[in-house]
Amino acid sequence: MTVPPVVLVPGMLCDADLWADVELPGPVVHAEITAPSIGGMAEQILAAVDGPFVLAGLSLGAIAGFEAARLAPGRLAGFCAISTNAGAPLPQQLGGWAEFGRRTGEGGFAEVVEQILPTMFADPDPALRQRFREMAHRVGPETFRAQLAAQATRRDGAAAIAGLSCPVLVLCGERDALCPPAFHHAIAAHAADATLRVLPAAGHLLTLEEPAAAATVLRDWLQSIR
Image (tube, rainbow, N blue to C red; front, side, top):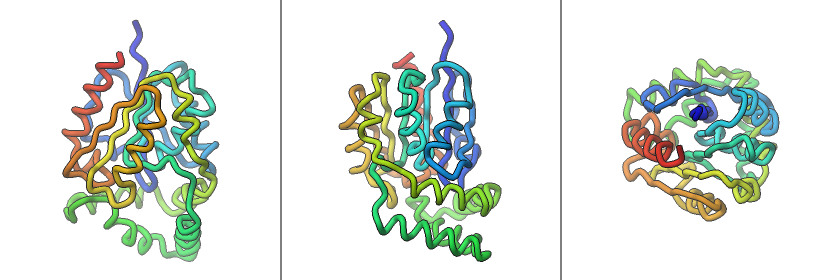
């Protein structure tokens, strides 16, 4: 029996380094999310591999994953939603993203990154902060503006989650300031076959902050669904 690949989808301002310390069994493919709409990002995810796959997305990567699940639920052998929010955007979020986009377009990308940076981790570890900073600058201002535009096209993901027959893993950090555990309890409640795991010491980018714990949860879940 062929083991379906795991497609890893990064969050906003993140790249494949987000997953570098998370060792997973079997084939792994890294998807990019650079389209200026959630629908376009979903198409990028679905085009990353042929046939069935397990989707693991963090933050914006999971949000694009919800849309991929809506478009092609039969392609998913499993779905892992990490550090995310399945709800439609709120007015204050739309305003904040528009402001970030304006400032970035006016040459303030570095300052915006520094403003976002403190919300990424539970603890202010200088090495982790620098790692995020380097990822963000590799992603760059143009892709960031496309990602901000995509955020504004989000829809509520509850129906997409409820429509999945595959196993769903919901993973979050207890100290995530952006997407607290309550968001993840709601996601798990919508899924027919859900597993919820909360990492006590982790913030938003838990694959960087608690990679060994995240890898253990993911490996155990993958083994159980395979």
